[in-house]
Length: 338
Image: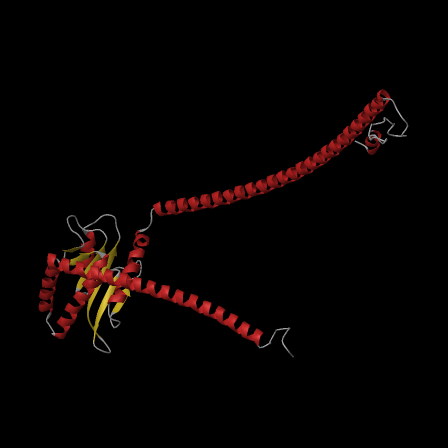
């Protein structure tokens, strides 16, 4: 209620009775006139308040619309940014999958080409080449350096290897061992017959047929037509055994007949189960020694790698330590005293 309206209702005589006066000009009014004016003033006051409320509501609604529009714009920008990011990521994923698919296809094509190449018929000398190389390395490792190991070239008649057993220093030839390497899928008795013929022509004391395939009913070690047929893993141990026989015959100056008789006895022993068992033990121990060497080398490599890591760590700490010392003594400290 306004001050004027309140004033028009206040009593203005000494006995406290209320006298009706106009709230705007103060003139006396009858009660009906006073009430009519008061009703009009209340109506105007109510209308003004309602107007203020409407204007305030409109202003609030305008602010809400502006805020909502701003939020919608921000959301729209974020959605657009998210869509752009997702599209970029999807493109990257698709490209990566394309690269992976290309690499996998190339790998499979290479495997197919390698398989086709392996399935193509190969000349016998190419099939046996890896086996000969492996056998040559094993012979070089097993025999003493004074012995001579000759690898016969392709197309040359005779066995694949000719070993000349040397005695003494500067070294005297005491006998020969010839070795033929076979990597065929099927056995043929012609292999042993040919090697025996090569042995006679070379004047060798013994002949060994290193073969991954054996005659029917035989396994790993067999004597046939005067030659030894053995799995490649057993050949180095056999060569050492035969070499000792040649040296003993030379040292005892045996006659040819005595040499032949001892050679026959040795071949008979080599064809026995006892000799096969002993050679199995030799092969097993040789494998175990090779495995031990491999494990030792692997252990050394691990230690060396660890030592290198520690050295790098020590160098980093040392560099940090020197930098701190340099800072303390004022080498590069701008706050240090001159």
